[in-house]
Length: 305
Image 1: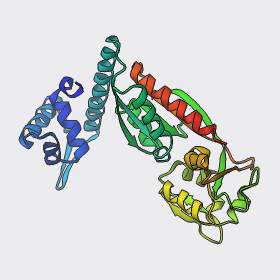
Image 2: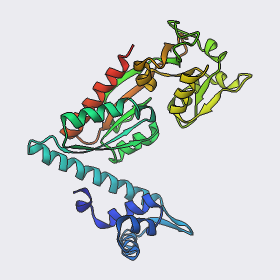
Image 3: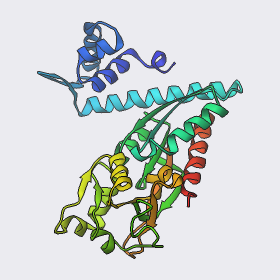
Image 4: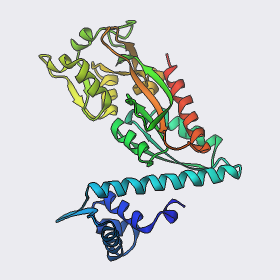
């Protein structure tokens, strides 16, 4: 429905921006490259401004082109919402919901939420993309996603918070680790141990560099990786500890494979997890159902002792 109601020129421009070239968009859409090029040239002539930089190896949107691409994606998002509202009027819990989430949700919160939705609302289809915090916020603002589960989401006037919870900072470690029976640990204790730290693409790394830069200035360099799964594997199978939140390792904590010990330092500020949506548009009922399911699973994960 969304693509049928979107003007063809906007449909083509959006795909060229996504693919980086007219040829790539033509292959993706199964249409002639000349048809796409013609639509772009007609719109550029009408607006009196170039929408793309034509580079040797593809196409890159200009500032004006970025505005048109943003409009196209918001238009598509609005059409999807209207379609969901129409289905709501028919009394069916059915429709397509787009979710943006963090990497750490991929083996815990998300699979459980998907299973619950499949069992309780089998006519709901989902599209889930893993992003970082900045990308997820932009996706919601632009209407490319309906609901987001996001770590450390800063206040944003175009985003509406559906649910939010603090995530106390702590360490994960193997159950037989010497500190596993402690009620709390200090960052100084942790820094003296074999430590695995997250790469810069993960939100927790930005926080640690901002608040606790000294962790990266120790005499021995820690192991650093942008893979949360590798972080947990190293902690589970070796002497390493990792600084993170409870939600990052909720499945492993529930299974007893890892232990979470809070950090007691006063300077150790809590992280946060937020379920959010666009503040510009009402959230369709089916997206509200999905958001409520995500909230229930997040609360259940945080309740793991």
